[in-house]
Amino acid sequence: MRRKPRLYIADERAIKSGEATDVYFLRAKKILDNISASATRVVAEVHSYGFPNGYEWAVFTGLEEVVYLLEGLPVDLYAMPEGTVFRAMEPVARIEGAYGDFGVFEPAILGMLRHSTSVSTKAARVKLAANGKPVLFFGIRCIHPAISPMVDRAAYLGGCDAVSGVAGAVMLELEPTGTMPHALMLVLGDEKKAWKLFHEVMPENVPRIALVDTFYDERVEALEAAETLGKNLYGVRLDTPSSRRGNIRKIVQEVRWTLDIHGHRHVKIVVSGGLDEKNVMELVDLVDGFGVGTSIAFPPSIDLALDIVEKNGKPLSKRGKLPGGKQVYRCENLHDTVVPWGRVVERCGVCGGRVEPLLKQVLSRGEIVSDLPDAKEIRERVLGQLEKLVSADASRWGPVFIG
Ligand code: ZN
Image (cartoon, rainbow, N blue to C red):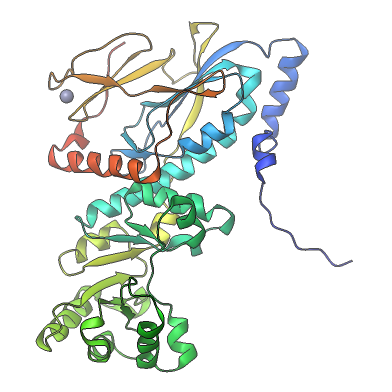
C-alpha cells in the first residue's frame, strides 16, 4: 500500500490538551494521581543557566503563546514583559499552582519560550550590529511553514524592521517586505526586462530594489539597473552566495563607486545571503540595508529550564539551583537585583536609582489580568533597551543576588 503523505505538525488541540508533551510527564502525573498527590502546590520558575559563548544578555519573547496555552488552567502566571532583555540565572517567568494542573505542559512552555527567545535574541544582535540601518528578515525558507509566523514574529520583536513572510506579516499587522527572486530574471531570461516589468506592475508604494547578481557581475548589473530605471530605482540588492563572493566588502565598494561616478548616488545598496552579526558589522558603513535569514531563523539556543523552587510554601530545589521563588528588580540603567519573592527593594545597589519589579502577574487562576502588548510595542521596548545596553555598557552588569 502506498503511504499517504501528511504534515507532521501538532495542531492547536494537541498543544492545548497537553498531548504535545514528553511521556515522562504523563508518567509522573499518573503516579501522583495514584496517591492523590497531584494537588501538591508548587512554584516553578523559568530561567537560563548560561548563554551561548559571547552572549551577555538575551531577549525574552514567546510569552503570548504561553498565555494562550495556560489560559483557563487553575494557575497563576507571573512573567517579565515580552521583549525584556534579561541575564542568565534571572527568572523570566513563575508559575504557581497544583503540579498536576500544569506539569505536562513543561515541554510546550519551554519550547515556545526557548525558540522565540533564541530567534529574538539573534535578531537583536544583528539589529545592534546594523547600527540603526534596516534589517529585513527573509528567513522563513529555513523553517517549517507551520511555524513561520511565530519565527517572523520573534525576528520582528527582536528588532528586525520587517519580514518577508506573508502569513506572518498578516498576523503581525505589517506589510510584508521583499524585493524580487532570482527566479524572475531566470524565467524572463533578461534582467533588464525583469526590472522594467517590476516597475510597471508593482504598486507605487513598493520600493524598486533590483536584484543585481543574476547573470553578470554585481557592478555591471547595478549600473544597468540604474540606467534602466533611473530616478525610479530605489536600490540594488546583492545576494551573492558566499561561495562566489571572495571579498564582499570590495564588491560593495566597487558597486558604490560605480553608481556614484555615474551620478546614481541616490541608489541604495542592500546586501543579503548568509549574513550574521559579524559580517553585518563589517559592512555597515557601506551598506544601506540588510536581508538576513538563516542566522536568525537557526540561532544558537538560549536554553531555558523550568524548575520547581517551592513546595507547599517551603523553598526547595534540585541540586545546583537556588531554592525559593525570586523577583528581579531593575533600575533604568538596566542593573538588576535578584531577591527572594516577596522582599521589596527600592533602590539599585549599583547606581542608587529607583527600581521596579520585572515579574508581573499575567494570569490569575487562568484568567488574563494584564494587557497583552502588540508586536510593535514589544519591538519598541526591545530597541529602547538595546540603546541603553550600548550607551551605558549595561551589558557588563550581571544580576546581583541578595538572599
Ligand atoms: Zn542601577
